[in-house]
Amino acid sequence: MADVHSRETRSFNMRRIRAKDTKPEITVRKFLFANGFRYRLHVNTLPGKPDIVLPKYRTVVQVHGCFWHGHLNCRFATIPKTRTDWWVSKINGNRARDRQHIKALRKLGWKVLTVFACSLTASKAPKTLNRLSRQIISR
Image (cartoon, rainbow, N blue to C red):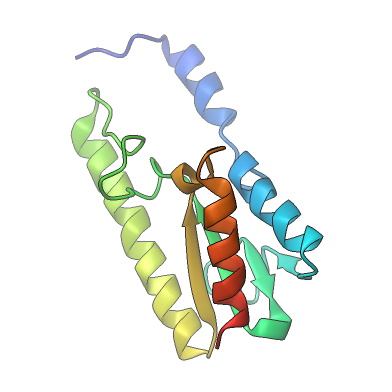
């Protein structure tokens, strides 16, 4: 199946996809700050440059997009109908890299928490964020 966009339009669309400061990430950050948690962002001395680092609790929070990180059984994690093999390889590579980073962080003594974007919709966000808060505090 051919792409419905021209090469230039597709390139423009892909350039607009953010890696940092995404809406789900900002939602989590605002909640954490409002609840007294202090954190650092994208610490490049840690494996994978985690989205949110809470040094006091020795915890990192990764905020993942369901599509890009292949969230299992999620309606937002669909494989595009064009260049399917390439997308499957790309998403599987992302998931493998995520596993490597989690393993390396745990080896360094960090607790790793992952929040997927689909769990931050208006109806699910309060429950998800409260659970995240409890997980950060618990050791």
